[in-house]
Image 1: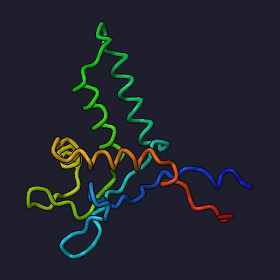
Image 2: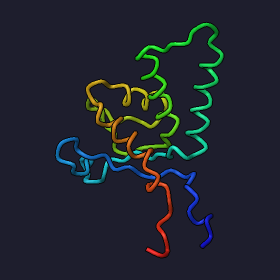
Image 3: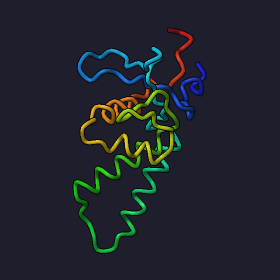
Length: 136
């Protein structure tokens, strides 16, 4: 078996957002799934975001402790880096164009923590970023 066939994808994969209680796929008014395109924790994008955060921490002279708010901001920033696109995202009656500011707006909503949870779980699941095995 060629181990390269098990290399993780650097390409984005699609998360279909699910209702936080019912587990059903959320759909747009036209019946299409609401999706977010993401790269995983093994991707170069994720690793670069993590290195940037670590470099910033190392350069903070004298400050060794981070507040909960700072840790949360780092987590949101990492998720923003891993988000490549979306479709069907409507927030407060307005369809949101995909851009980093709108991603931050969505992921920072304290009344919608389940969206961040789903994104976080999706990018952490390596299986979402591996090609299906020809042997399965």
